[in-house]
Image 1 (cartoon, rainbow, N blue to C red):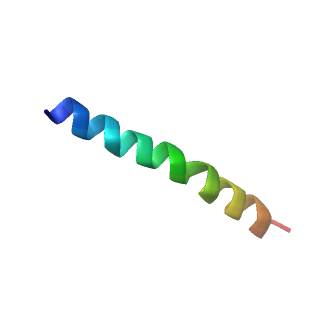
Image 2 (cartoon, rainbow, N blue to C red):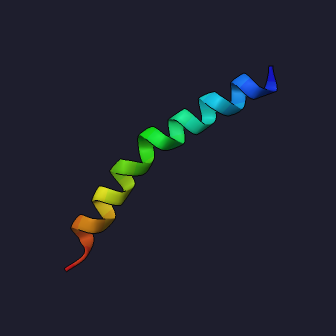
Length: 29
């Protein structure tokens, strides 16, 4: 179902988002 695919995509984004935020924060002086 489309909803399941969307939930999987959102879960992936939610998992990867914190890493991107940590990396961007670490890059800041």
